[in-house]
Length: 573
Image (cartoon, rainbow, N blue to C red; front, side, top):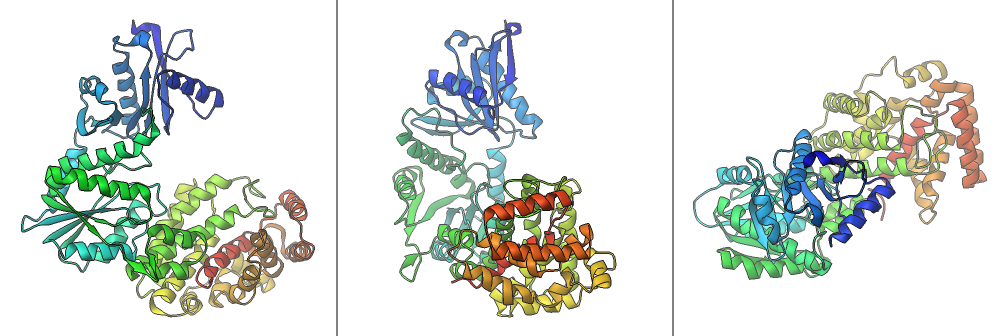
């Protein structure tokens, strides 16, 4: 009978297709949750959806089969299709959250149960998976005395996290810290794990473990099959607690789980309450530790993140241990680059409206480029006693990564230099009290000038300052002109656009000189000054249209705008 049916991918980005799937799921008392792939079953020549199921990474979601096909084996065929798609993506352990009454169906398809709750079951197929992760945890285990566990997100790692670990470690012979593994946080799993390890590296009875895909989070838990969304959070938490008790705690021979008190977040407080109810029944005590408070306020990672978004790095670093500071510096630099990219309108440059004078770049490609640079900004910020040769080496590797991510398109070479060397300077400033611009001057003076760069040629022909010259001057223009101007416009919604115009009016932009010559570049400076003096968004948009026609792109000014945002973060009060 299978020859009568076909399984096809349903593109949910199309509103018509998405609506059809939503109606099908609603008819089956389900709702559509986040998925990155969805397949449907229909009869040949008939587009009526008779069955459907989706994938969100390694999780099968939103699966339903019409009554007319139940008992025909179509469920197995659809699941096999989804598993095959996952395997084509390099995923060989597929999970499914399903109702308890459907567990037997998936069990017949070689799925085994990982955790249970009254309203849901978490199952998995394939070799390895959770068992491999538990074997890894067991390899870290010490069997001497009492073992305890802390599970934390550390987004980022704060003084509050360190306080919790210190207090917990004092109550057990060995403490295992498990970092939640998911990359929908501001800081990546790589960064969060590194911060935790650096903060704990001198603690002999603490081991920071690699995270896994087995910490259930709000970002991945599918609530689509729960009729009442009020049940979703308790179901999610109960599954997570059950999985911990059945697998994680035994692998570490842990008999204590430590948590911080939660005076603010209702869901986290409920999670703590459920742990205190359920874990002791399975041989694991729960110990709550009072959260760290500074200045009358509880230290929270969410507050640190908001400070970064608000360009208040100098305030954020006061709430984290020194070992986390380089990662905050790197993240602030990435935030500054993204803010520059999002500034709209920008004459001749890529923004949220158009691609400016660039036929080989767009907004999404620029975001990809920025993301590729972050690990290298981490490395630069982590340099303890930075030398020019170290900075250059990391910069070369970062450029390779950028070009690999963009298919060879030079998206951020200039920004990589200016922001990269400033990252080193700011990290030294915040950690060791050496002024950021003095570090930049010192490093730049030891970097040999290129003879083939746009800046070198502009300097030789027109005595214009190139990127290296600006760095050797410690970006004096940022401190003396552009940053004060930007800060003076604190309540102006067009502060970023106006600051860009100021920079364009004063900077000998070697990118413009290369494209249209020195004389036209001087005219661009005058046009930017005029647009700033008699400012309106319409005039800036008109300027953009002219620049696009003439192939004018003030890329150097864009780099300095991002740098201005970045330096603002260590001076903003």
